[in-house]
Length: 438
Image (cartoon, rainbow, N blue to C red; front, side, top):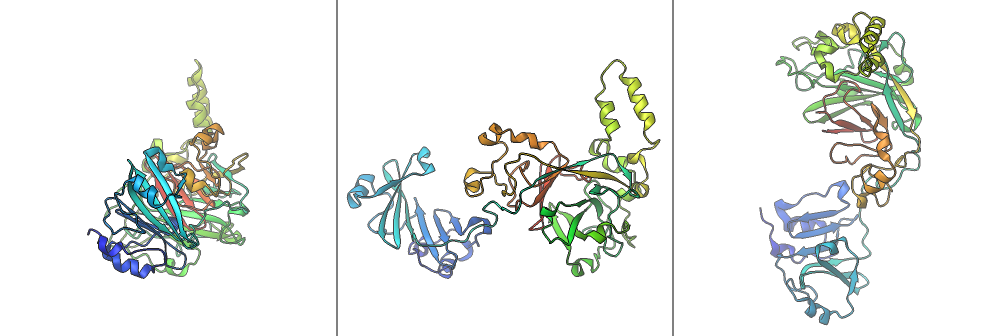
């Protein structure tokens, strides 16, 4: 529905947000936390103060409105200069698009702004210079976060040998059938993707909770229809369970205590009426597919051998591996194995503790340097891109940057067997949100 210019024209600093809502009607949209009070609808814009009033308003041609303090839309520039001979030119990035931005103080509480293009007034604004606006979360560097870590998987082991720092695939610790999450769409148990013991600075729920376990919904197959999609009461009664949904997939993350991290491994529930998920009924190879699985050290070495004696070397390496190998085990047997996670302190990353954002103006107060910006390339930040997963530091999203805190983990597809369309995902460990892109 088009906005009613006649109702918006009287808007000025000091007007309550309730009056603005009434003027906009169904066009009203609550500004997001990231917007810091900014609201733009067609040729009208405003910024709402922390106490719910308008701190600034601006109108852009062809918005029709009566003259504002003598300035009218379409006024020739020379006429404006005669009206306000002491008007001040201000530096603005719009200059490269042919704009000249001006301002003049009408009083201690009101500033008039004007935008001129092609020698004609095309923007008129009013601003209260005393206004205080809401600030977006994670705008500044967090001085408490001083370390980033790279996470690398190594060859799978029997989980009877519990890896110290966690593991991918396999079964989770301390999550029994009663707590095991169930899909809200197909009624099947979710698959355990990884459990990782976090370095102290990333334990955002408190020192008591030392590790996280992430479960994921079906991503590789189209599940048959289920007669049972009752997810039970576990979600409602577990305060350390966080349910996240993205791209029509369920993800569930548990925070674990030291005792839970060391507890016996859990087993997925048998759910009456629900189909058996492929990760239980098939081998990892048949379920994930060859190109979606991590490679053992022997497989990587064999793949890199191109010498005349390469075939003989491959045969020797193959003979040293278990006869069947993890990827060929039946699904239920494969759950007894996990790929241990090695955690290494990342050295020299300038973005530790800084919330990752894409554009320079978003990073003005934090100092974050995007990896593929000119400055990022000059610093060689692409050197931090070789990981299975990492905690904090420089982010490498495939598309836009999520509005996350600097306390995040970024994961590749093989770090637990995900299908992100050849992309990567990020999980905010403070806000408990997940996003991925490809």
